Image (tube, rainbow, N blue to C red):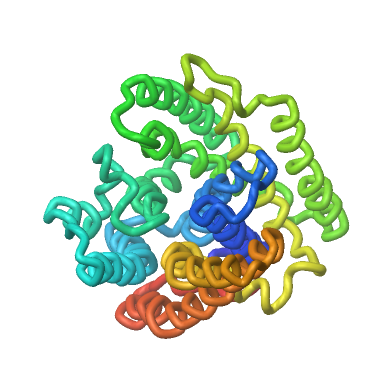
Length: 367
C-alpha cells in the first residue's frame, strides 16, 4: 500500500512524457518547423497533465498530514522552495536578456507580480515574465488552497461533487471571460477555468486508493485498458470535431481533452509499465520541472541557430525538424540536470535539514 513516504515512479515517467510533449509543441509553434497534423495543436494540454499530477502527488504525500499550523507552514515553505528558486533564476535571465538586447525592461509592477506569483490575477500580465511560466502561478494558487482540499475532500464522493462544481464554474467563467475579451488567452489561463484539472487529480487519488490493494495482475490489466482507452477517446473527439465546437466563438468542449488525459495519471500510478519505466525515464521525470521551465530559452539559444544553419545548408524539412527538436531536447536536458543538481535539489533539502526531527515531510522514497 502506498503511503506518504512512497514515490510512485510511474508518475515520474508520465511527467517526463508530458514535459517532452510540451517541448515538441513549443518547438513547432515557435519555430514553425513544418506543417504538422492538426491534432498536434492539442499537445499543449500536457500542461493539464501536470496539474492533475501535482494534485494527485500532493494527496499521496500529505493526506492526513496537514493538521496544525506548523505542518501547514512547512507545506507552504516546501512548495515555495520547490517552485520559486528556478523560476526566479529564469526571471533574472529574462531581465538580463532584455538589457543585453536593449529592449524595454519590465515595470516594477511586473517584477512584484512575478516575485509574489500574483500575476495570474492580472489580465495582460497573467502569462508571467518567464516563458511558459503562466502555469506556475496557478500551481501556487492551488497550493494555497490545498490544505482545505485535504481537510474537506475526504472520499471519492466528495471529490466528485467538488469536481462537478468546478466544471460548472469553469463553464461560467470561461464563457464570461471569453465574451469580455480582457486580453488574449486569459479566458483559458484564468484560475477558475483551470481548477477542474487540479481537482480531477484529487478524484483520481481517491479512485487510486480503492484499487491500490488489488493484485498486481488485475491492476496491470486495468492500467493497460486505461492507456488504450484514453487516447482512443481523445482521437474520436478530434475526429468528430467536438473540441472545436463553439458557442459565440467560445470553445465550450475543449476542456474535455484535459479530462480524458487525467486517467493516464491513474494508469501510471497503479502500474509501472516495465517497457517504459526505467532509470533513464524516471530521472527525466525528476528533472521535468527544469525541462519545462528551461526549454523556451533553449529554443531561442539552440533551436533558432540550428534551424538557420540547417536551412542555409539545404537540409530537408523533415530532417530539420528532427535535428532541431533533438538539439533543443539535448540542451534542455543538460541544463535541467545541472539545475536539479545544483539548485532545485539543494533548495528542496534546505527546509528538510532545518526542521529535521520536527516531523519534516521529506522527499518520498522510490516505490
